[in-house]
Length: 264
Image (cartoon, rainbow, N blue to C red; front, side, top):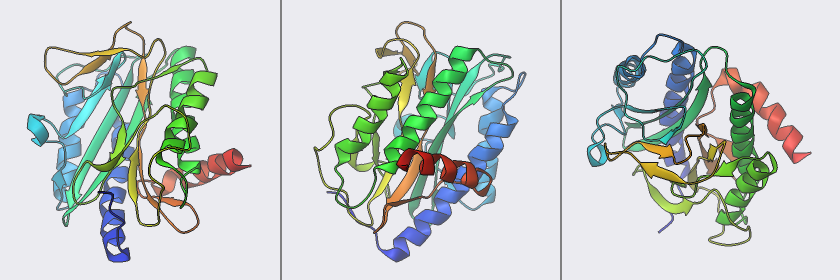
């Protein structure tokens, strides 16, 4: 069942998602050569708990950490460790929190030091595909319009969309209906309606789309060893379009300009 949230519920969702966005912004600035993914995880958990919230991922189906930290060929669900980031790495940081009974969820991929032109292009195309997807969210649109927007942009840039992992609804549970694939034709699936809350999260590979899961049971990597990127925002459908709940003020003008360009 897909839930349309009340205005009172959206207020609570706005608070927890802005918390997630603000912590991710700090992690984005912290990621640098020599910093370990465990360092990022400890900082994230400290900030979540200081705000009176709980890490959404820690303990979820046994996941051991507050963030998923996925480096280079790691696509998603990487487990933080003592691995130090190196100049030229890209690291995807995915995190969620629970506050007052509601969940927030967002992800960003960060270039560490000086990265290759391919890495820059991959990150740019993945983030752009997220905002192209967000630009089609409005009452009456179909769920599959989101994936069609992602796939069309990503493949036009010469990259590939991961099939095994998808976006999702979010609210009083971390994962709710509907599932939101990042590929496929538009015009299919449930219609979007005001009050629906969606976590949209394209995962994009520089090489082929295929992935495999490592022996830790969590970390997904590209089968061909190519780089991967992951960006995610949580949005709520409004009467005129949507509101990005995880957007922080420092990114607002850039994102509004980008969305304005996409919408023409």
